[in-house]
Image 1: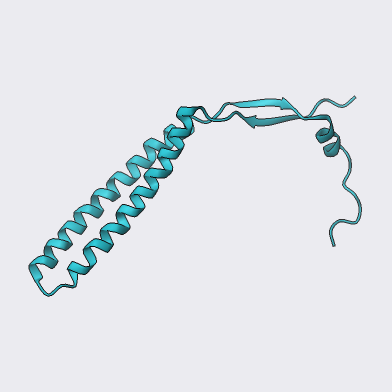
Image 2: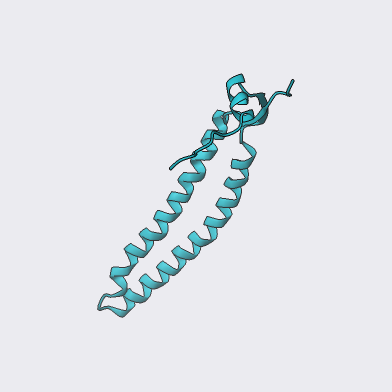
Length: 113
């Protein structure tokens, strides 16, 4: 008799794990929108006729983008580690009889055409 086929599955994330997952993706979206929004907000002032306003807008844009580019990788690392740590546990379960029989039988001749 053949030994049973075991499948490796993951349990569902806990409620805290789902909150961490959505926080991770929300953070990514927020950082992307913040970067694009800064560029969109500063660009009209850079092309303006007043050079002092253009310099101020350029300095603000550089500081805002620099801050976002500092926070983005740090937040990604912290939330990414939490995301990995809150995954569901791995479990080995026995495959249903019809699934293990389908794996053990040879493929049909002919294939797709």
